[in-house]
Image (cartoon, rainbow, N blue to C red; front, side, top):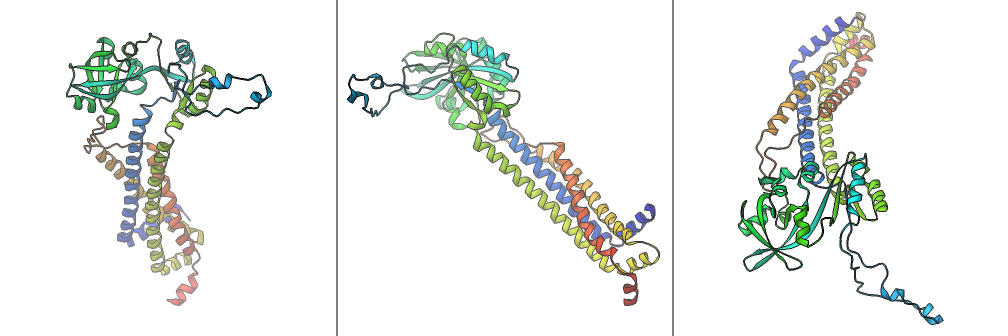
Length: 423
C-alpha cells in the first residue's frame, strides 16, 4: 500500500477521534515536560552539592598524621636467659612518637607531583591550631596557611570569599581571612585587627582582609586562612614546614590507586576523595536513580493512555477496518496504519514536551534562591544537559510505539467477513 494513502487514512482516524487524540498528546507532553524539568533540577542540585565537596576537596591528600611509636622501649629489652626470651609484654596507654606532623622532603615531593602528567595541580597547606582572643575569652580556631593563587585555581577559594580580596593574603603581611561566623562572634570586619594565641603561647596580631563562607556554619566558626609563610611563622617553623599536600588530578577516578602509589613512594599517608566522601556519592546516586524512576514512570503512564485510546478507536472503527481490508488493505497495512496513528500522537506530544520542559527548566533557573549556608548560590540550580532531552525523545518514541503496536496487531487480525456479517 502506498504510504501517502496510508497517511491520509491515519489523519482521518485522528481527526475522527480528535478530542481523545489531543488528550493523549497532552498526556505525553505533560510526561515529557515533567521528565525534563525533574531531571534538569535534580542534576543541577547534584552538581551544586557535588561542588560543595568536590570543588573544595583534594582528589588526594598527602599528610603525616601523629601515630603511636611502632616500637615501645620495653619491646627493645631482651633478657639473656630463656625466661626473658619467652616473656610477653602488655602495654597500655601507648604514647605517640615525638615526630612533628610535617611532610619530610616536601619540596622534592611537590616538584615530582607537578611533573606527573596525571596531576592537574598541587597546593601545599600548613595547619595551625590557635585561640582567637575575644576580650578575656579564648575561642578555639584553626588557621590554614595556603598558597592563595593555587588554592583559588584548584579549589575555587575566591568563590567563597564574600567580602574582601583573597589575593590580599599574598600582598598584605600578617593578614587573615576569617570565617563569617567567627567574625560575627568577634564583631570584626575587613580592616580590623584580631589577636590570636598559638599553641606555644605566642600572641600575634593579624589584619582581617576578607571574610569567607563555606556553607557549613560549624566550620565557619573555627576555620580561617592566611598565607603559607604566615602560618609557618605562627608555628615558629621554617619555610619548608608543610602538613598537607593537596593534589588535583585530571581524572579523579584515578584517585584510589594513585593514593596508594603516592603513599608507598613518598612514605606518607594518603587519602583519596572517594574514600573520604563515599557516603556523599551514595546520596548523589540515589537522588539520580529516583529522578529517572519517576520520569520513566510518567512516560509509561502516558503510554497506557495512548493504548487505551487506540483500543477504543479500534473497537469503534471495526466496520472501517473491515471495509479497508475488503478494498485491498492487508493485515500488515492495517497494523502499520494504527502504529502511525500512535506515533503521530506520541511524537507530536513528545516534541511539545521537550519544548515545554526546556521552558520550565529556564523558568526554574530564574527563581531567586538565597540559602544562608550557600552564599554563592542566587538561583535554583538547573542543568541543561542535552542527554536528558535525548533520553526523553527516545523514551517517548519507544513508549508510544509499544502502546500502538499491540492494539494495531489486534486490528490487523480482524476478519472483515465476520464484521460485515455482524453488521
